[in-house]
Amino acid sequence: MQNTALVALDRSHLIHPVVNFRAHEKRGVTILESGHGAYLRDKQGNELLDAFSGLWCVNTGYGQESIIRAATEQMTRLPYATGYFHFGSEPAIRLAAQMIELTPASLQHIYFTLGGSDAIDTAIRYIIHHSNSLGLPQKKHFISLERGYHGSSLMGSGLTAIPSFHLNFDVPTANQHYIASPYPYRNPVGHDAGAVIQGSTDALRAKVQQLGADNVAAFFCEPIQGSGGVIVPPAGWLKAMSRTCRELGILFVVDEVITGFGRTGPLFACEAEGVEPDLMTVAKGLTAGYAPMGAVLMSDAVYNVIADSSPDSPVGHGQTYSAHPVSAAIGLEALRLYHEGGLLANGQAVAPHFEQGLRDLMQHPLVGDARSKGLLGALELVADKASKRRFDPSLKLSERIAEIAYRHKLIFRAFGDNALGFAPALCYTDAELNLLFERLKAILDEVL
Ligand code: PLP
Image (cartoon, rainbow, N blue to C red; front, side, top):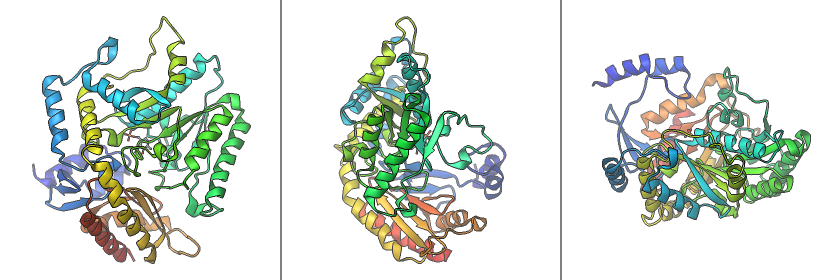
């Protein structure tokens, strides 16, 4: 079918996630047709350098033959196996065992979901079950960070603290509470690591004290806030938050949906700080975007409380496609590529070049802040560097930048408040990073 016909059909019928519906009708869709390595080709024949790994998920790059083979073999042998009623499949069990092996030692059990939002929702449901099973029915309040993103399920969007995800949706927030994002660039204490960390632990303590420790079930956080604008807290922050949760007697839940699978250097961000969470959520890089899958991991302590709670009744939580065997086969191959396939090592090798490239752009008159960890980074654009004044929202700068970027054949994410997010695939070469920065510089110069 011709591009114009498809664009018209899209405009009439397909609802896209997280767009202004009317603006999308006006702009029309860019139809992506194929991908290879770090590149995507659209239906109009443009070859675009993808500096965002799809939606920070295609960590392996596109067109990985061995993933395609693993999926095809599994689909041919057994395209579906229910996990209900004590059935299962070999790839799901093997992936479960490998994930337990590769994640922090505190995590001994895993439940597979269809993506990140239902991983968060599943974690919340299990935590509520856990509180009830402990005989603590009042322990149901949740704390997360301002600017945090934890998906858009009804409960998870309550943990998400980005205003557009609440607007007009009547998100149930009675049990949801927020503390300030560490956000060094705009933190009144600046980049002083000790003060930023102290500010967050003090805020968590104060919030728990205000609500009553017996009423708070858990604190959720991303090790680096992604959709909030790639906010990179100082080293030691995650460890300090985890220690504070332990002191306060609340569960510590790490959302590694973006930061997992080599995105920040090690396989998981928790590893870098030796953090042992009570629960952890993952998705995206688990299957590198080749099929939908996410997961919730939990400690023995949490699992056993739920397991021993109601001997005669099932734990009523499940989805038809949980632990889907094709997704699991893809996940196993993606894990092999990260390790034996050398992707993790390559990501670590090129990350300094990526981080330096972002830092170099601090010279640009538009760039107020450059922040990164591994292959996850952002530039924050400001109207005035000295005062850090933001651009007037009526300028719709992010939309303009996205348009210019398309003309320069570079894909990244322009956030509403003018942070530009980057998450190149772990297969990137130095030459591809050079091209990324060449195009990015040209884009910024055109915005000026
Ligand atoms: N948690 C985090 C940290 C995310 O970044 C996302 C998605 O970007 C989610 C949860 C939700 O995942 P999904 O979009 O797969 O539902």
